[in-house]
Image (tube, rainbow, N blue to C red; front, side):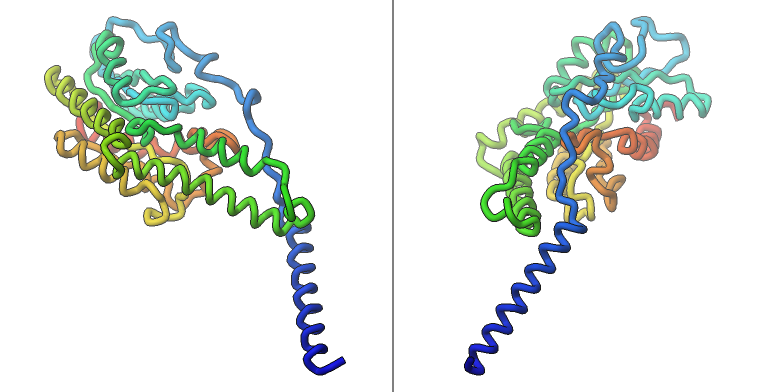
Length: 316
């Protein structure tokens, strides 16, 4: 065999050995199993613990107890907490904390899955004012301002994509299966991120939901101002890509929402910093459901309490 042939053979054997080692490591150490879906297994606490008004909360009387301050909290499924026990939701934790400080307060969780800001405005008009609130807090989630599926549904899509049986070379190589799964995860995530960004930065048709949301926020501000009710907005972030502010794909959109609130003279707090540096899946109710779990609910209590107290949404 020629000298060149020996070199080619040695290089080929070296490459084969490297590939063998990579495959061995992937099979031994890189567990590529996808946790099973939680569909049908989680307890629907919102259904089990709802009050007669249909909300995931305790019973409220229409007549407000004398000397009691009522804060109505509006939101969607993130605030409703379908898969989280009622007493572990941030709304009830805040209420307990305030009462422990000697404040006579009731926090009414008027949140329903699927509501957007326009729906929350309508709910306040139809139901919320019947309870004679002293202040109103809106928990804003980004899909309130788009026509898109929510982030939790995106996680379901990613989970379903990764759970598909391997195809092609991935059927035979665990290492290639890991590479292929990472590629597919990036593709699904990036497509969703692009859609959200276009909902704020695209043409007039794509921005329609955001423009409607801005109008509803303005109506909420005017309505509360007319009734002399303190009103504030808290932005609950998507629980994904939490390594840093720069890594989070929607940080600039939260800033845009906050800027609009400030233009309406509405106090606003962005809760993204509360979650930065944490593992996003550790904050989800299930591997395929990015709604906030009990840990995520607990984390937002302190910043929300500071916000509502500083801005007069609860007694000082």
